[in-house]
Every structure is written in structure tokens, then in C-alpha cells.
Image 1: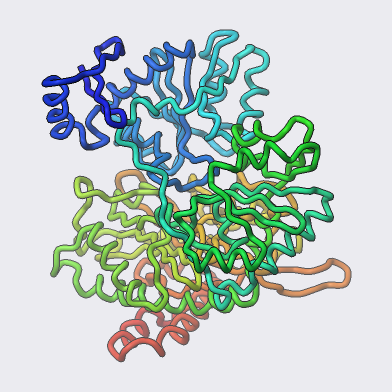
Image 2 (image 1 turned 180 degrees about the vertical axis):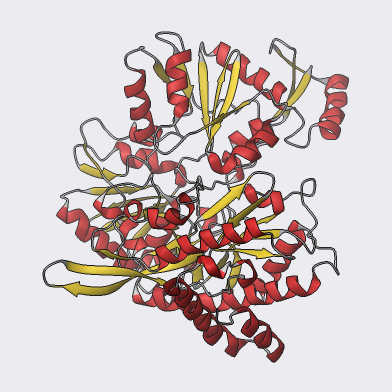
Length: 638
């Protein structure tokens, strides 16, 4: 038996899923049982959750269901309310899809999470299915092969983008597999589900943003006119935050608020819960012609557009929202108009980025110095190290929080690309081995993301070789000069070449776009083999991107070196056009004790020397004498 609370009632379910409402002494007894045993969302184990989900499938006459790790806005990182994948499986990675059938359950994820997935899914009844990347989500192929002809696949239509549904429909056509909009499968199972966040949003001031709401709305309106569209539906949370110069706290690490936006030539409507908007902010929005409407009313606003035209991002609009657009409307698919605008940082943002990197660099220097001086003398765990770094960042002006959960991996844990230490798994750091630390900060004046790999003792020859090969790739990309129109995937091989030459590689992208006091991952640009070939993804001046090659040896160690780089103008040739380059803006020493100098050529040594000179020059004015002395040693010339 299991007991489930629904709103103010308790129900008893037998093993066949039959429900009986309880009352009297039974209810009182079961209330006690519920409070003692079931207050946590982990009161059922994974197999029990799967059993209840399979009963749901049977009641809906479905052959399978597909549970993604996303929200109605197709966000990469999501509020707890939508973490269905994690609740069902116990897997805490940020990417994955679960397929459940009457006799099978599998979770597909990419190579960043293979080691983590093997550990967290062990014994759950959910099989880890390893994506080979870069393009096809293989769970679709699996469904084609394993569902019966004319089978029925259930999805929650609020969580799947139009693009994804079309992709599945195309794959399923020959077998006649039907995609069924079945709503929220877990509604009656996940009884203590967190509510949709109602945290207040706030205004991101013009002194940081550089462009007003009015300017941004005018820019978008101008683009809408060029495309001859009457409406533009904006569904991604970071685009909405950028357009309206608002920030929030609805999703951990990502300063966004849950909302939709519908833009017209001379009108903008923000669909957001009224509790989230203060009277002062509401007045400011209204003064810029922005109307506020309830979050849920977006569907009704779409239903009444009639035969007018509407532009939306098919990869970001849910099937549910799309189906609320009238059939007679002229539907125009395209990237959100704000996305490329947001990616190209304006002069004010660029100025703030450079100053924010100084603050973040000071915090990193103080942390690395503290680590070196305390390792082996004070007990330091992966968790306490991450907490200490956060403390150093919190001392900096305009610090708001971390930009993602810090990845602090000692020795073998460093080989888990998106490792997250827990009290059960955290290692104690010792004066030996190597330590990978991938972290970042959210400041009112910028977002940072940096990875440093440091030796905690005397590094082994293999560790130094691997570190230096990663460094060579990092330098090759940092020094790249490329013609206008170049996409990230066309040059990211520069970072891999030194590793390839030694039969080594890494399974993640080499770089991603970074927001401005926004999401640490943003498009349209990226540096990876799976990057889009769209002209909008071309690297352009003002784009902030990470440069982060690495190499990982399971159970032994991981190495990654990450700086953020700005695309800047380099030169212009009358015959061949404009050329761009990267300006490295992250400021933090690279561990010279891990560098095998003989593997670096003269140009690579000069780049490293010049980088370290810049780090010392920009950070030292904010350091005390002891810190300056430490930094001088770390940035010595090769």
C-alpha cells in the first residue's frame, strides 16, 4: 500500500492503483503516517514511482510516455516545479529524457553525465542510455524500434517544443505512431510538488543594461516591420528579461522570472503573475507602454489574434501554446528577434564585463592563495572549497550569487564533467593530486564563468602532459583570427588539435555564449560540433563566449582551462573583408606548476606570458602586499 495526499484529502491506493477516500480514524492514522513518512518527495522509491506512472499509462491506453527535463519555456535550467526527471529518477543532471513503457524505463543523456548517471541510476530500474551526440536524440530511434505499429506515445504538451514534436512526427510517420497530448502525467503522483515560483522581479537599471526598454522594444518593432509580422511571441525567459530590463530569482543561478511576452508594433504585453511585480516596477513598465496580464492568460491572448501574422521561435514555443494560435493566423517561424540583439553586448555592457572580470579575478586569486596555504593543514572538502570561493565572491561589489552550481572535482571527481559534490560523495582535498574548479558569479554588472585546474602537490608527468596539451588548445583558440561570418563550429577544432595529435579528446563543446547578468549559457553562438549553421550564429563583435577545452580520465583526474573571450574587430582587407579575433577577458593565473614548457612553442609561451602580465597589471591594484607577492609568483614569465 501507499498513501497519497491530494490537496486536503487523503487516498489509499492498493497495488492495482484502485483509490479509496479515507475518513475518521483511518484518516487520522494515515495523516500521522503521511507526516512521519511521506513529507519528503523521496517517500517513494523510484520503482514505486514507476509503478504508479505505468498505471497512469494503462488508464490512458498509452504504450509509452516521454518525460523531458525542461519547462514550458524550453529552459536549460528549470525551477523545482518542473524537475520531473529528477523527481522520478533521482538523476540530477541538467540534460536528459526519460522513456517509460510497461516493461522498460530508460534515461538518455550526453557524455557530460555518463559517470554521474551510472552512479545515480544504479538500482533504480531506470537504464542509462548514452547519447552518442552530436545531432539525433536517440530515444526517438528507440521508440520507433520498440513501440508497436500505430502505438501511442504520451507527452505533456506544455513541455515539448513545436520543433521537437515535428521531429518526432517525421520519425514516427512510417510506423504510424501517434503522439498523444496527455497533460501532466505526474499530477496525481507527485503529491508534494513545489509550486510555480512567485518570487518578485526587479528592474535591471539602465546604468548596467546600457539600453532602455523603450530602445529595445523599438529595435524589435523595427525588425517586425521588416518581416511584415503583426505579433511576436517571446517565450524564452532570458529574452524576456533582456527585453524588459527585468531580472528575477525564479530559477537557481539564472536571474530570470517566469513570464511570457507578446509584442506588437506599438504595444507590449508581459504575461506574469501580478504578485511578482511591485507597484513601482509596474509603473515603470506602464510608462514604457508595457501592459501586465496574468501569466495563464497568454493562451487567450493568442486565441484572438485572428488572421493576423505572428512570429515565434519553433524551438522555444510549446506545442500547447502553438495549438492556441488560430488556424487562420499566418504563422512565421524564426529565432526570437531579441536573441541576436542580446548576444551582442553594447558598449556599456562590454565596459562592465571588463570591470566585473577584475572583481571576479580578485576573488579567484584570494581563493587560490587561501587553498595553497591551507591544503594539508585544514580539512578542506570539495563542498567547503566551493563555499569558500563563494565567500570571496560575495565580498565583491554588486555580487548577487553564483552563475551555476560550482563544479569542484578532486582527482577522479574532476573527470565527471558536470560533477556536483554532495555530503555523501564529497572528497577531502589532500596535498597531492589535482583539483578542477569550474565556477562563476552573477553580478549586477555581468556574469562570469571560469575553470582552473590546479596541482595540490607535485604533479605526475602524465598530468603535466595532459594539462599542457589542453593549454595549447586553449591558446590556439584564444589566438584565432577569423573572417566575418565564421561560425563557432568552424574554428573549435583549433582547441582539439593538440589533443587529437596524442589520441585524446573531450566529449563536450569547446564554448558557449554567456549572458550579461543573465543565463551563463546563451545563444545563438557556440563553439561545438553540434552548433547551428544559421547566419545568426556567426561570431560577431560584442559576443561573449567561453573557451574551455579539457581532457578527462575516468577515475583518475580531469583537466579543463576556461576563460571567457569577447569577439572584437581585428582588421579589414579590401579584397577579403573584415576579420575578427578574441579578446580574453577572464583574469586569473593559470597554474604554471602543471605546464610542461618543452611542449610549448615560442608563440604559445609568449601568449601565456602576456596573459599573465595582464592578469597582474589589472588585479594587483586591488590586492594587499601579501596577495600581490603571491600573484607575482603565479604570473612569472616562462
